[in-house]
Length: 307
Image (cartoon, rainbow, N blue to C red; front, side):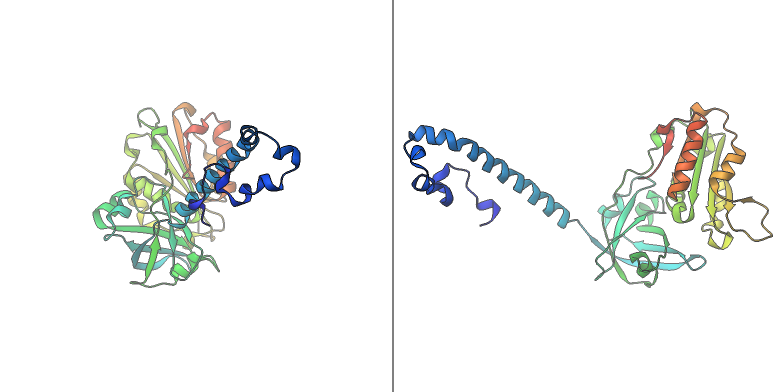
């Protein structure tokens, strides 16, 4: 019998309960009908509670199982940096609701490949305006052996994938607005964590109206650093890019080590009360940068993350 066919009427409608009196001890059989109902009322309420709980669980399962997936073709899959990072562009022009669900930098979605059970969670690299103007989502994908991301990076133009609606709160820029009040914004990214940071910079957060906007971007070496062709445009929008290489070659004259160490060497936080930060990348980096900022007096509410 299905859950929906359960009856909540008194006990005669339950076969197991309709025979209760014939099998009950004699001292219970002799009770007045109203006394019997009094004894069974708690059981009746318990069954009603269990019924409602099962309905609730079933409804939740249905919502989870019917997650909306939209098929969309790949436009490009091309190397972004050495052999591990790839640019991936997906056409969502035939799915205006999906395109419109991207509203904030820092949001992400799930991507499935047909016949592959496990989806990948991917931060969107392009600004929301690109979906509305050109009908595409752009991603920076790190190919990890044995992952769905690795399979994705092996696909070609025209291959079809499945996308969920865009999810996540994104970067809460209200926390560091207006720009006149928060003149310093410090941005930290490592590896493919630069993906949602690109979305942030190109979507715009009034960087040109702030006096000090720095992006500390860490990678192993220049060959593994994506978006170098965009640095000049980012700088013209008001974002000073500080590349930090952990294993550079001998010709490198810029910052070395990890981004948290490069920031610790520079510091230059003139007013913690008017400083905000945006973090995306390795957990250790995020934790250490957060500790440095808080120690300098920056409020944790002003340290933005996209998860």
